[in-house]
Image 1 (cartoon, rainbow over the protein chains, first blue to last red):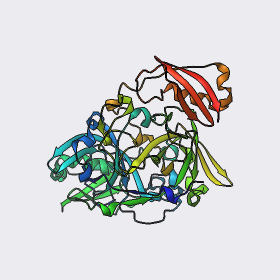
Image 2 (tube, rainbow over the protein chains, first blue to last red):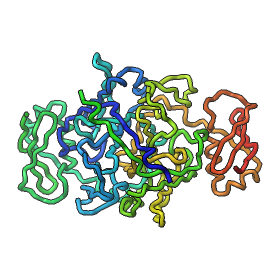
Image 3 (cartoon, chains in turn blue, red):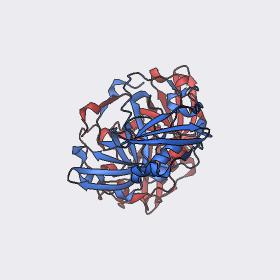
Image 4 (tube, rainbow over the protein chains, first blue to last red):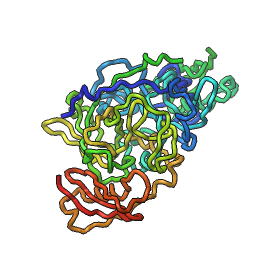
Length: 231
Length: 231
């Protein structure tokens, strides 16, 4: 039996990520589901030097190990209820990617778009991140397809839940203000940000994305954008 | 700018892994390279209950986030020298999977073979682990091919280094004592456990694996097993 306390570890952020999500509602359930989403990773001052990312640009994808920053509970339950299973079926915490887990660590693969060396240090621009704005990053690693890509891996109980997509309808001029973030917003909405499949066609939802509040409703598999408010 | 100290985090092992590697020499450079390698993950008492792994058996592969337990240095260099590049080329620490990194976290995908509920708790039998015996595990997550498998990801500077394999020769009876671990040992040796490609055909190497000390030498691309000592 291992001595537990001996292996307790203090980890410190190596970077922080800036995304267009100021709250959890709307964040894609996994990384890569909305590839149009751009985010900026800023290395902490002690790592913010070109040598720390030397040759990183030769990879197309990178891993982020990060902290579920909104999850401050000390004790984690042994089971969780994945939203994709309707929210009532319980699975083991180690059989899920839920944020409510021992140590509160998240794992996401994102596409590497660009590394910028500015006078304030190194920024890494990535696509497809499923992280809240301001999330601390505890490690950045290259994605190695030889070991990390397992094409024949089984999807387990998540099989069959992945193809649910909404059709997003809107007045064309409504999304002009979003400029180059328009496709990312549509991608988010197509994924169906609602917690469960419970049908409540009269309910108006509000989703914060970048500097906008997006109002929408959903009926059957059609999501209608009602309003785009600039904050 | 984020407040660094605010996001410092204490993490505690959720499990410990038992492998056939009592030292670093011989451990495959990445998970999955030697699929015959079996290891046993034992959950810590507070998580060692069937509900913590409920539905985990529906997945074929799992992620381990673990601690490089032999790496006790407090400060990490910004660059490292990957063995696969010959040991003299430096790349950024965030462009490598080196153990010598800030926070010392490792990431490995392993094949899930079996979950055993015994009177001492839950054990998870996995294949392909590249971890030292006794390594603390900080998280276990299901591998989700939809987000985690990126078949078109670029291999970066690691391209072209992956196909180096040795031919392993030995007297047939020499490996009888290894029983069902024979193929795993051959897999380890085929990967070329030596640190660099420096040719030193007269050198005799010793590799500890399970309860054996394996003596071998390498000439050109042929590895000859000289002796198998039971410890």
